[in-house]
Length: 166
Image (cartoon, rainbow, N blue to C red; front, top):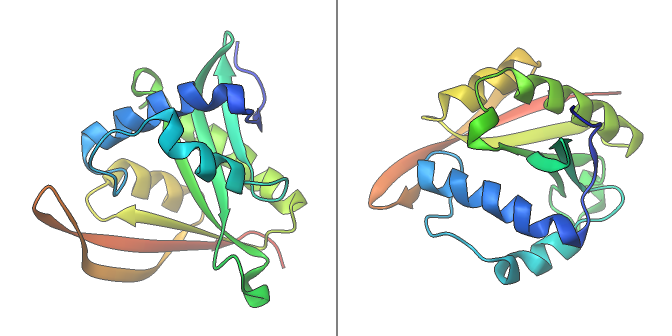
């Protein structure tokens, strides 16, 4: 049984990191190229707050996906209603249209955090993520050509945006 998205707790961090490390191995989902530890990500976890949480989705008590909302230019008031969104799904649950469901839930929750604009930063070769976000109304707002180099390969980073409320 799938539970509703809920705010992550520090006790969830090992499962969050396990899913994230799977994404690192695929080479197209994150700029990290080496696996990370729970200790590496404690400060990142604690930087999230009630208006920019990490949300998790459970299936039979096991975390199968997580979504983070992070401030966009955290210290500038002009961007207070904008956030970056990331989604990571356990490899055993990918390709089952669950990402669309989870992302829809997260977008609805983001509205209650007074977020008006969501941004997703996605490598151009990450076709599944691009299709998912575009299906939910995100549009390409920019292309940072060859901005990242991972394992010796230059990558384009696409900026996708979506205005979720006025």
